Amino acid sequence: MELSQRFRFEPVGCLVSPQAPHVAQARSAASKVPKVLKDGLPVEELTHELAAGHKIIFAALGTMALSDRWSIDSGRASGGNLPPGTTGKEYCQHVWRALLEAMELLGEEYYCVLCAGKQSDALDFLESEDALPSNVIVRTCVPQVEMLNDYASCFLSHVGFNSLQESLMAGVPLVAVPQAVDQPANAMKVQKMSWGVSFLRPMASVTSTALAVALEDVLQVRNRRFRAAVQAAQRDLAGGVQRLAEEVLEL
Image 1 (cartoon, helix red, strand yellow):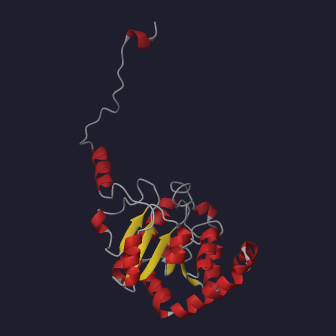
Image 2 (tube, helix red, strand yellow; image 1 turned 180 degrees about the horizontal axis):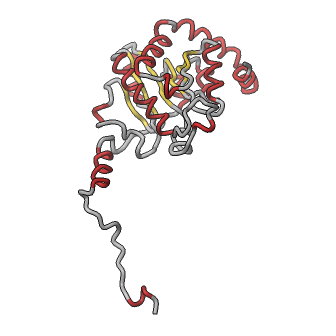
Image 3 (cartoon, helix red, strand yellow; image 1 turned 45 degrees about the vertical axis):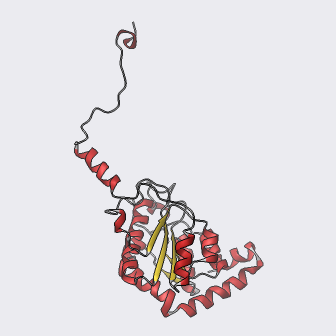
C-alpha cells in the first residue's frame, strides 16, 4: 500500500516560529520599504517643480540591470568596469544610495525621479520610506521618452545604446554610470563629446559627494557647454537611426 494511502498528510507549510531570527529579519527588512511603488509619470509633482524653476534629474539604470541581471554576476560582461561577482542589485543600490545622499546635499532646487524597477527587494537598503529625501520620488517605471522630452534637465543613466539615443534626441545632457557590455564605451563617448560627465568603474568612483558635484556641474557650472554639445548631436542625429548609430559608435 502507498504511504499516502496509509497516512493522511495535510500540507501546512513551513513549521517555524515567527520569532525565528531569519524570519524576523526578513519581516523587518520587508517593513522598511514602501509596500507599493507606483509607476507612471508623477505629473503633478513634476509640473510643480518646473513651475518653481527647479532642475529635474531623471535616474534610470536600464531594464537589464533591474531584471535579468538583478541577481547574476555582471562583472564578467563588463570588461573590468565592475568588480567580479557584482550583481545588478549591488550595482543599482550602490548608485541609488549615493544618489539619495547627493540629492540631500544638492537641496530643494533639484528634484529627482528615480526608476527602481519591480524587484521586491529593490529598496531594501532603506531604513524606511521616510529615508527618502523630500526632493526624490521613486517609481517602478516611467515612459522614458516622454520624461526626457518634457521634464528632464539631466539623465543619470547606464548609457545603454537606446537610453543614450533617447537622451541625445531629446537634447538632455547625461551623467553616465555604465555597467557592462557596450555601456563603458558609450560612457567614454559621452565624456569625449561633452555630452555630460561619466563615472567609469562606478563601484569605486561613484560617491555621494562626487555625484553631487557631477550633477551640479552638468546642471549649473558647465550647463551651457553640455547642452550645446548635446543639441549639436541632436541636430546631427536628425538624419535617423542609421546616422545616430554612426555618431554613437564612431570613437
